[in-house]
Amino acid sequence: MQRHLLNPYQHRQSPIHRFPAAVKLAGAVFFVFAVVLLPHSAWPAYAMCGAALVLVAALSRIPAIQLAGKLLLVEPFAIGIAILSLVQKNGLHVFADMLVKSTLCLFCMVLLSGTTRFTDILGVLRHCRIPPLLVTTLALMHRYLFLLVEETERMLRARKSRTFLRGRLFAWRSSATVISHLFVRSSERAERIYSAMCARGWRT
Amino acid sequence: MHIPDGFIDAKTAIATGVIATVGLGIALTSVRRTVPSCRIPLIGLAAAFVFAAQMLNFPVAGGTSGHLIGAVLVTVLLGPNAAVLVLSAVLILQCFMFADGGVTALGANIFNMALIAPSVGYGFYTAIRRIAGDGLRSRLFATAFASWCSTVAASIVCAGQLALSGTAAWGVCFTVMTGVHMLIGIGEAFITTLVVAGVARVRPELFFERSQSDLHPRYGELTVYGLLVSLGLCVFVAPFACGWPDGLEKVAAALGFEYKATQSPVFGSPFPEYAVPAVKSAAVSTVIAGCIGIVVAFVLAYLLARFLTPQGKSGAGLKSEDDSCHAAPSA
Image (cartoon, rainbow over all chains, first blue to last red):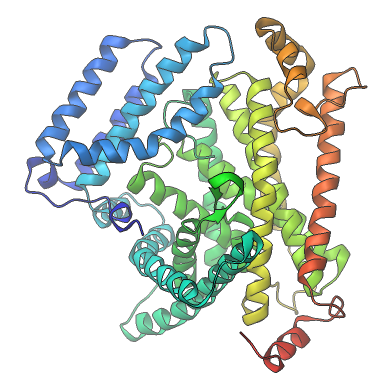
């Protein structure tokens, strides 16, 4: 399915990749907050922020086409909400302003996820005294995400090879059955994981 | 409904951030207190499950497709506290890994989709199950109605936040967001009910239930979540609801929107722009249209539950459902 979309991290030899994850995460969050807090229509500031991002992108050695593709993938959601702002006084101004701001922030987050492993981000979160239960949940989720998506693909392939789609209602019912089986399988897997974790000396 | 960065201003971001942190903190402590440690891996896997389930497309008319949101599904399967944790984890991962939903809007997104949606859903779910009984049909009925309500409630609060940030006018925001999500909610209710029916067929013991010895259900957490929901409504929706007809008319006057609205009903519904034609006041007519929407959803939910439950099993408990499943030849 969308395997390349599931793992946004791209391994390259670059100074940006070698930066500590904590610095990159803090920098990205700071950048996003700064962009959001910029006054309306501060176009020179926007241009400077954009130039900084382009510089980082060039240093990271991730191909521009891939970055642009990722950006185009998340952009429609921003445009969808921005369109709502058109229906008011000087709406076009607000629309352009917000679209630029959100694109800058999206670009920043795309760069962060392209150059930093999520496990490193989790390590930073653990250091920041984020409650361990939340970090454990995030870590387990990230670890088993790919597995469950693959399992879904397998079930869908098995279903496709055995059935013909008779209309929409049937498609809905069988897709919903796939989801419910996915839940049953994940809860069984969770039981096995728990025993394995206990066998290796896991404490909460 | 993921709000990107740049659409929420500083005051809204701070307000939502504080409320979301408090709600997530409450959920974390009560999960640690009530959920046995053998269920911890299940919470992590349920988060991955929600993510994987969201990637499955359901064909809707005209080449478009929708997908599950999963708030009420997780609430029904794992209980409200775990659901808050699971949905927050999904949103945090989507924010940092896939740039889906902004960092400054993370508080708002967690508040709408991980706090409002499951607590509203859980409230309706328990209320209906208390009234309609313990059978499979009442479970499906409650699930369907709760998922519709939770989707719509989250979208109303989301519209309030966008309007409070000055992103869009409340009249436009509310009408579009709630209108679209009333339709999305129908799809969400369908998918959630079908999935719950599927789980009930295979492993009915997996559902979250309060333990039988617990005769007095604990109202503590319900009260806390109820307080959070009402706080959100007060902060984000009430300012607009009070000066409502006023604001709506101002927008309409500024843009000649009134004329356009009567010309083209947005979704071809019998109540264009949520205004029953005969009633003069905008606030009253919106309330009436909303009530009619809720009644229609209620009836649809009941019909769906009836359709999905086999005849003669409506009153039967889950045990007999399980037995009949083993007796019947499965596909």
